[in-house]
Amino acid sequence: MHYGLLAVTFLSVNLDFFFILLFLLRQYRLTQVLIGYLIGVLLLVTASFAAGKVLAAIFPEWLLGLLGLLPIWLAFRADDDEANAGHRNKMPWLSVMLTYLSVCAGCNLAIFLPVLAGVALPDFGFTLLFIAGLTVLVVLLIHQIAELPIVTRVMDRFGAPLMKACYVLIGLYVFWDSGLIHHVRGWL
Image 1 (cartoon, rainbow, N blue to C red):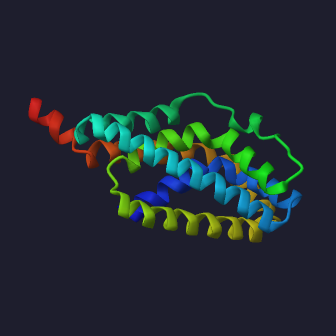
Image 2 (cartoon, helix red, strand yellow):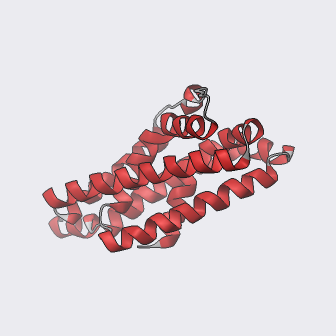
């Protein structure tokens, strides 16, 4: 598993949710936000891995490279994920988790599925640990910078284009890493 790609994937699919984390961290205790976000992330990454394994059992690896179209499609589709972010619950960690799942489920599944489709089960354990570490690090970092107005202004201005660029690059990497490009070049 290429951990650089995993980190870029994690950051790009969660970039829009980082804004929501800023608000959640003001509303709930740090531990409640951390627990809810961590559970949500690990659920979606595990679901992506499981779906990838099922598809990998049916199709050859190079054909799974077509899944790289998912992140590219997500980069160019019109989307308003933040409109769904208002879900609340009496249990703060559950509210955070449900908010994350409602806002990010589609993107996370579509982006992580092609990235994790070729990962072996033993490597997936390390992948989960790596993603869990990134999740904790991100929440702690956002907690530290939540009060800085400059961060909000920069993300408002450049967050969407940066996220779209990351999605396209991830899709292209999936094309290359799966062997799809090599296979298609063999046809030409």
